[in-house]
Image (cartoon, rainbow, N blue to C red; front, side):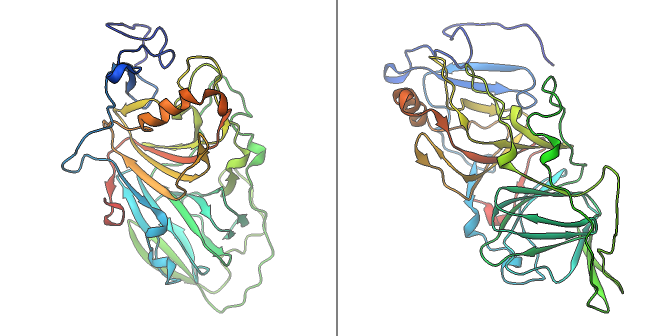
Length: 364
């Protein structure tokens, strides 16, 4: 529910996230803490606190966690027939890590849902029945439900961060921005049918159905399609082709940078852009409690305020928990205002409307 009603009580700034009032702890600026419904698209309250709300001790499941992807070893790292490692899951989606070292010795068909794989490291080709799609670092590879495919990885490190959704993945409607923002549909890469030479008497297609795997075998190449048309197809998209939506006078929330959505799931790009320049604007994301979404964040790379971010770190913040950059980063951004003109972060976010469970592989 969106309303024009807003009440202000006590010590506040005239505009949210700009020119914060003083008299916090040790005479510093107050901390702006935002509590929101429906991500950032519903009712909200900005609370002006004396202390850092992210400093607390927890007991039980309700806590933020993080893990380094490089420390997790999926089955497919050592076994070509192995599966990716499940990281997080709920009724709407499962988040996976693949570190496949060799090409799949089979073809695959997921009947449980759509797949979106973000290429954190590595390169290769996805062979699909629509044609091959090459991929490299920074690409998304989107494979809709029931499409037969096979990942053929190149030599070297491969690290794929996967989001499998029960609902159909689709682009959101960017109201008022037009057809070509924040990305032009012409930049997605779709497969062309390719001539296939069948070199086996039999091909295996592993089918994921109701969370279980079965195999079917065919006496011809699974990718024997010579032509296709329609609006249902696999594709690749690179984050370098994303046009960041910006404001010079307000740090925009993550929901402004949404790439794909499915029932209960948002996939979001936080990518390099100029910093806000209007005096008094808080450039660093404010402290936040997202009342209706769990948040997953993968640091793909980049830096913030001149300091490298920890590439490969994946974190989980459950809905209703305080989280955000530490207060020292906010203080540094104000103190070094003239030294930094851009934020160079590369972060892939997933918002989940239902609480996520953690696989033991990522439990802290």
